[in-house]
Image (spheres, rainbow, N blue to C red):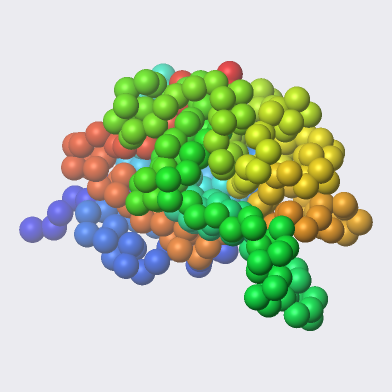
Length: 358
């Protein structure tokens, strides 16, 4: 007897399909749905919905007719009321990655029609949290300074140097330190897991985190001032929103205590770059930065020359595994949905407001 499997459509560009969709996950998907992929190549923007011609919109609507679920990513047109009206069977729309503000989905229109919306943008939380931990360790060991000296071809690390130079005096371990996190979303919570073996004291500033979560994960919710001024390490994980842009200005940068490590794996525009450079030039803090404002870091920027700075070119979230994880997580969401269970990563008006800092 032939099973009547749910019908799932996938709309994205070819690059996404070839790099995000692992065969093991496609095989798992085939076990409980019939699916089809259609290539679309609409321009993607972080700040606005894709602009779509009438012809492409008509093709998209035709593609979605008869679907029970729709998965979108880079290249897809916007899923809006016109799509919902033409697709009465649609019960779930999912966004894979690259659009944490859901520009490709009209979440409000979906909610009115009781269509569940989910996203798996948290798939990149693993590599970003890993790199944040790596940068913490690099900063505590003053590894940026040592690397600069060694690639310069100088004799470095002699017994006399180890005993007398201040660069070797700054050589700390993470175990038992106090760490402050600005933001405790998916990335922050992943980093908290990674930090557990180091027995650190954790201070967190995040106005959207409930006290119950702080208790269950073992950290102290506190003010931004405390997170900046007391820990040995300060990690910026806040999303870039109108409210957080420039959140760490000159006053905040100078609240970081002397001798501390400042790590930013979030967005460069959250930090006043000029104030950060000024503070770093004093030599009393160390910075490990995966992001900067502007990007790429200008070739003549003073921050490139500072010995107490370690830079990487915004690579924290761009691992091949993170791309396949987006789809792996989406297959799990589809399986939960069609099994009658609750999905885990729901998009609602409330979650979007939190992401925008409203």
